[in-house]
Image (cartoon, rainbow, N blue to C red; front, side, top):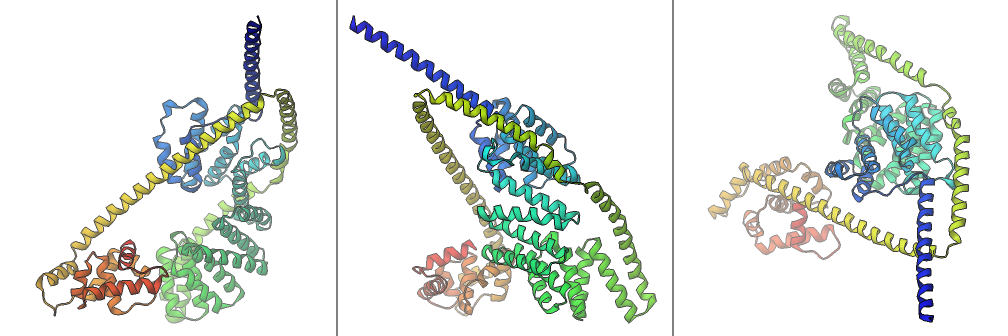
Amino acid sequence: MEKIKSMSVSSLYSKILRAVLFIVVALIFSISNSCGNSHSYPRELVVADSLCDNNPDSALTLIRKIKTDQLSDNESWYLRLLKIKQKVKRNETFTDDKEAKVLVDHFEKDGDKNLLPQALYCAGCIYISLNDTPQAIECFQSVLNIYADDKHNIYADDKHNRLKAQCYYQLGYLLSMQGLDKAAIPWQKKALEIHTNTGEIERCIYDCENIAWSYQVIGKSDSTEIFLQKAWHLSMKLKNERIISEIASQFASMYNERGNLDKAKTYINIALAHPQKQSVSPIYSLAMEIYSKLGETKHTEAFCDSVMKYGNVYGKKFAYQWQTRKALHQYGTLLASPCFEKYSQYTDSIEKITPVGASANANALYNYSLIENTNTELKIENNTQRTFIVKAIFVSIILFLMVVILTIVFLRHKKTLEERLELNKKSLKEAKMLEERANQDKENHLLDKKIATTAIYKDIIKILNSHSKKMVPDWQLLSETVYEIFPMFSSSLYKFKKMSEIELHVCLLLKIGISMKDIAKLVCRSEDSVYSICRRLYKKNFSDEPTAKKWKDLINSL
């Protein structure tokens, strides 16, 4: 009897346990629904989303491999968002906003609310490319409205600070482009604050550049110099030649406006060392102006030719204006006439552009803060309701002690998933490394084949086969051939400590694949001497144990 009673109690306990677990699951499902219809997604989608921010090309490759027929409805919408997100991150051109509108509408009404901020941000970027400034600003401020109440924010995740900073950056950019630089500065500083806290140095540099530019426009030269100096110090840490060139050109512009031409010349020469395609016109135009003021006619003429070749309409207008003045001064009115006609043509072109820009600015000049205030009260009310519901549900859950067991199971499951995700990330990284290594090996193989077809390589083989001690390679032809096939090799060598002539010859021969034994014949030294040269070069440049193989591998990697 006691045994039957014990079995009945055990059976009852089992039923109660199942009932409790069912209620807990139902409550958690209810919480999930009340907290914005959040969803869990396949690893491929999550990884692709992460890659969009840092490596959009890899994200595109992964997105193309995802099999759409195996996705649920929510996962399909997420994939549609990722497709448009990677296009935004890759700066592709958009011709309409249809897909962006559909995505925003879906995530606002029925979809995963956690993805709404990303959809709005992508829509804002698309409107920038379509020159619809008001719509773009409305999208970015809508994102900030979502993140307005961090304490009860159902949308917040690990990436929301980065997205907020990007919205601040875009708002500052849009206001600055409309000439509203005083209004742009607070947004730019908010972006800088977040990027400083997250340690994103390159984004901090761009923020400092934008703030410096805005201060320069409104005439605050001291503040301009402060933020340019901050950008300069950060760029020196990164050692990014493109960014250094950008900041140097801003320094040159600032000192040119102040009339400090010597400093302006110093910085414009730094900018000219590594000009980027998109900034060639302003850099050459500024260089032309500075050297013109300094009276260095020869350099001014060279920059004038570069502006005419690579410049935009503004640069070419300035170039032909200078040409006209020069022709008037040297040859008189008749020979100056063609230059003046060109100057007039570009002036007319700019005058046609200006009204379009003015119209766009006029359409965008309205109280932008109105958008931010429109939904704030409603959003606070909705957040309050959600908070009340969540608290009530959690109070009910506390009554069930079995939630502890469920929590433990959940944590274990989460740990397992994280381990799998980490393993998959590692596998993806290893696969990428293998692919890059294979591409590099392929490229090296092609370069080796190219080297083998050159005249100097054939001469070297001929010398080695002749066994003559008097024949030596044409070192000048060898260096020219190597630098032509490996364009970065010359600059890489100059980063090392100064080499003697024979050390340079050894490096050139190593680069084209000549063995140590054959190098000894070509430089008229013993094989041990060649090994000694390699060890000496490695020790001269690095502090660890010098070996000839380390130097050879280093040269082959350049």
